[in-house]
Image (tube, rainbow, N blue to C red; front, side, top):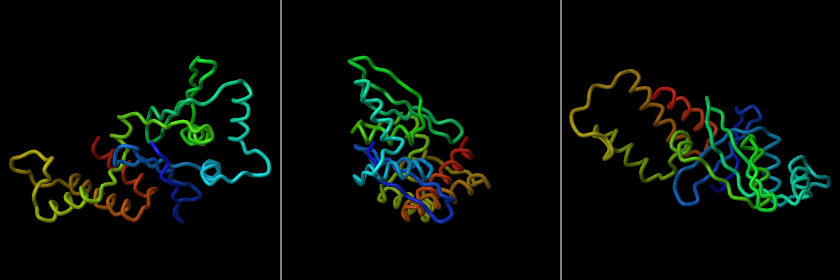
Amino acid sequence: MDILGLSTSPSSGGAYALILNETEGKRRLPIIIGTFEAQAIALELENIKPPRPMTHDLMRNIIQSFDTFVKEVYINELKEGTFYAQIVYDNNGDSLTQDSRPSDAIALAIRFNAPIFVSDHIIEEAGIESDPHTEQQEDDAAVAGTESPSAHSGEASPPTSRESRIKMLEKKLTTAIAEEDYEKAAKIRDELNRLKG
């Protein structure tokens, strides 16, 4: 995954959405992070060096002092809307792993130019499709009252209130992505996941 950017909105209460983008795909993964972690990531991305080392710079210096480096970062779990990550270190050929918050792991990864990986099941569950052509086809199919090509053939049953809510949330999700309001998109995605079970 690549870091696409950081997004915020006035209603976020100081939280940011860190947007990861598939290097060979069209899905994005928004992760809500705190202001301090967003600042640590943004400063490194912009190559801004503070006069004294920040926490993640200090961590990098300590790791390097033991002849160790961050080999990769792996976002490996999603439980009840919370992402979990592991930092994989290389210490003279030995691999060591440590649990971490994704924001801290990514802040370290960019300081070591280490790749960021996300488990497939997390992308499937929490990723957001960023292909506007596909989204437009689905919207057109819904307006025309036809099923999308991926839908099952046969007669459709009348929509239930749950199905109506899912359709409404899917439209809101498309709008939030188009407006690049990734924090809102992440909340809508979580609500959709709860409704879909």
